Image (cartoon, rainbow over all chains, first blue to last red; front, top):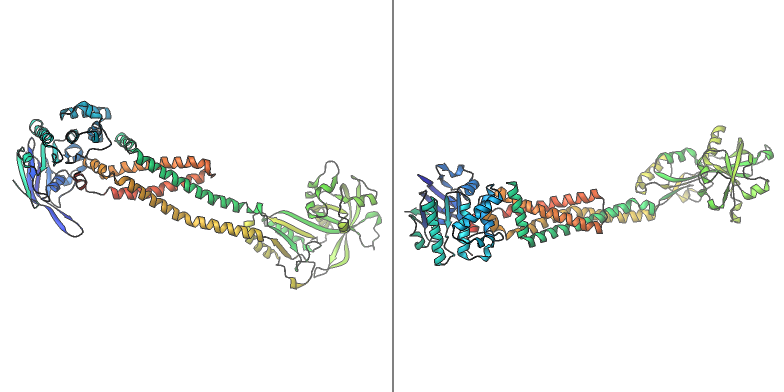
Length: 221
Length: 409
């Protein structure tokens, strides 16, 4: 059973001078426990598709179903709080919060008590292979790899089973990139997450169970 | 959830402490400026309200050509009407009559002793309150009463071998006037009166002494003597101070209604007290200047609050602009657009309230305003500043999360 189903989705945005169909009549499905890669050149529409999958935008045509529920009928903020979370290329941690505060944030947002959120946060930081001393460090004091692993820990803190990653290795060296991909892979295969990675790195895409290729807003398997 | 919002705001304020302090100081400085501005307005208003005390406006009844302010024939009814307007204070009125000593009053002889009724000794310039010696238990306040008593001139006392406390038997005569207010040197007899001598006065001005009255009684007593005799009573002089000089126009209009005219030298001499002169030039000049200054300050007040809103907009926009990434992360993690706005709005509100409080505390050492005025200014500041801030935050809260977060460093 697919956890996410994209059904004939298009997304058009209008700028001052032109109208662009970034995603054009795309249909695909995503199942639990698998890692997907969406590859394509810059401007192929993959980041727009991720934005739609994350519920940050709504398709101008078609529908995305989350466990058979149309996304357009869902509380999309709640969807991002409880079901799907996103990891970005540039980590996007709160710069003035410590690693632990960053990881605890989505839990506190869901109403979990600060003390409990910190306890779980420490466990999540450990689960992505980071030492406890990292907990009290600000993002600027950490390496890129450490920041991205904290970002993954924060994504896990939402408690959802869908993890969307936009070029997660783009700002990392090879070693750290491999570590992050391994973590994402283990999340899908061992913990049942649906991991969807947007990448133009074929090395990363090769690790995925299923690869979708995007070109001019359209998708091919 | 409330705890989360509160904690997030606290963390934001602490984490962005430099921006928080700057925001707080901006609010404090604007509040200080507004309170100083309002103090200026309130100061001018107070000055205007108290201008009458600093520069009193006085009015005197005179004859039509303005040549005479005493020895007039003023209809007593008019004096009562002036009092009834409630617009005057410190009234000084006199009534002039003549008397003879009862023992020396042959019916045919013209009365030779001046007898004045007055409500205060300030009616006289040739002597002052210090020149009067009173019988024990009496002072100047007896002139405001109605007692059959009098003070007399010392020379009169000596000449008639009288002393304080003696009773003075007199026959009172009212001067008669012709229809144009001219004195006819004919007198109408009111009848005999008995007055207790409760004081005597001395004057150093020998030149004026012949014109001074020998006997002075309370105004109301003299009026009642006229009423008892059924003879019309006329005022001899009248002057007063305006209670509220800001009502000068209302006063002038009332005086016209009562029948007082402006001085007109071409009308020629008459004894009738039908005109009025006012000492209002300095007051009007000062009041005009103050009013103009006040109007200018007040006319700028709405503009100032528009500027406050603009400052709120610009300051918030500039201080929050660099935090757009933070807001995008919040949105990405599932904070609703409204929730995101609520957090940054409350954060701004807390800083503005703290800044206002700081400004008010500092201003307490600098300005002297009523608590209600201060409260109103603070409320207006918060409303207008937050209006600008709200617009800025609404604009800043409009963004594409992916567009911001997909940017690479």
